[in-house]
Image (cartoon, rainbow, N blue to C red; front, side, top):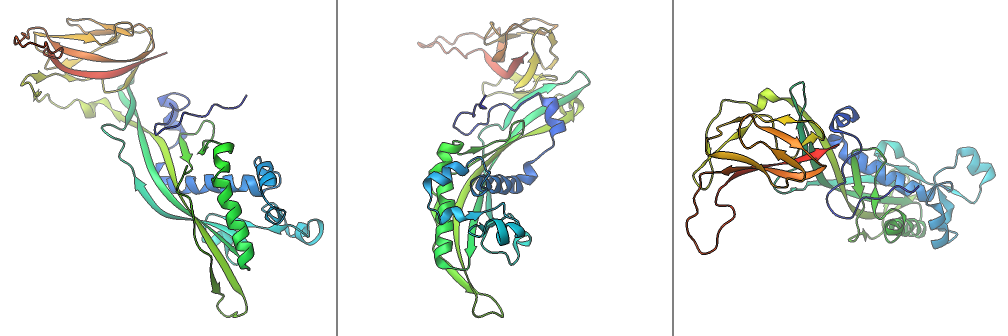
Length: 342
């Protein structure tokens, strides 16, 4: 069965497994550039390797000259079995490709961290052993320069154009411009537009005036998205209560064991602990079909069905000011979104 691709957009679908699994999978944000370069390298290799999964697309769209550039030849293959094929070196770092031609070198040219909006927090929960676990979204743009180098201007143009074709238009057909390994916490999105192939340039090797290397670069702006696992003791979030006032001048209570987007298991009662809950305040759930809550202490949240909703704190003693259009939020104090999971 073909793996279903996540929908187009800027939010990655929920990672496989639970928050607990995320901590054992490792944190990859500090390796974003390496992961993006590795993903692009593997993508290009899937076309240039005669046994690659995308080789058939290249074979039907390129000339016999372009098909001569392959990545799987050994030295013996070049000398004996495949005299018409040309070993092409595909590398992510300069040290992997010293003095080897023809070659394709991946160079990162910049990183842009993207603001995700109001809150990067995707989900959170408090564990029975007293820890706060959360999933945090990380999104950045990594610019990659794919540099092609050969000993002739014509070969450089052929190979560079071939690589350009892999990203536009073939990437929309092959993988919907998305590279995502099953079970991983990251996703790399190839550019839909804005792919630029620069002009050819040449340099003469030092100490060898007869040898000229021709280069041409393809500029890519890739998107990298991942989810980070966070874990801290709940004691970090239970400092002495300091009253906070809302815009309406009313005191906002503090939840000690409920954080925004927290996951709560279906079928188990979840006690709530609050500070600063006044006598005139009461609790409610925005969608009673998902969960119910006791309106008076001791406060207990009772999940009923999977889904996302909000826990509301309302002022039971608030009075309507008599305006012509009744404001539904006249007794609103605060709310905390949460998720009921199986």
